[in-house]
Image (cartoon, rainbow, N blue to C red; front, side):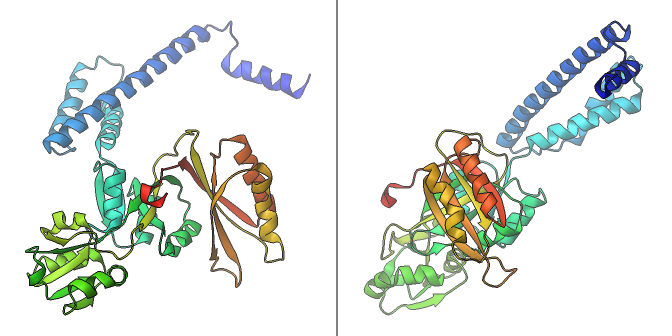
Length: 379
């Protein structure tokens, strides 16, 4: 007798074969389990709709009185043999799951309010969700890892300034996947309480924003004092407290800080766009128009990078980005970040990445996600 035959015989002794009197009972249990599963999912779907209505009305998700009434009603209806503690346990689990599904998705962004990251999050998520200000990029990654945020949105490159290196470094540190990309045009407005140019005596903003508007400032406010601050949002906050202060900030900041535009689009150069990455959440399905991001490290030997990139050329794939960053672990050792067109589920993309892996010391797939069309001013 073979090992497989012995194993099959043991299984039959333990569970009974098809002729066992247990078989129809087990079949009935399977059908009941399937029905229970279907009903639980139906209940969760209805619970989700209840949550949407609560959100529109401004009601709290947590309703202990209603939950207690549900448990008490079911306990009274229970004919047995399930005892009361079992009923309470099962439906407490279901109610907890319903409460969780009613919660709006939480989205972390680099604060403060009305920062470019905040605006990008509002635009990408269509103002739907709970937007949670975070003090730093590390906090966004870390809170997604700890499941305290569903999503985060982080800048990865700017059309003028180039790569956002700290974001790239964090992908090396955390096991976080990319689920989408978003391009946000960056423009600067001059905002103040009165909206009058003649009232402006001091201008505050982030150093980068000031540098991008220096010609406009020289022409229109040659005698104003220009002061640097930590962010364009902080500048808007300061402007909201003094009629003689103006802020260089986004147009959206006017709404958040009750300011009026003195002038719009005062940047000296157009085409300033930041590419953001959405991280966390579920992995998106293949659309046929996708991008895959990977990071890898190679040996510090002549031709190592060329050998790692050769599979992309042989496959005829379009490489749309390649960046390098020091690994921080070894001197003169680098991580390479690469975007290629296609989805990891595409056979040619999968095989190409595996060939790169064979040439690399280390390789991580950061995510496959739909390609977002760039704004017209970039084309």
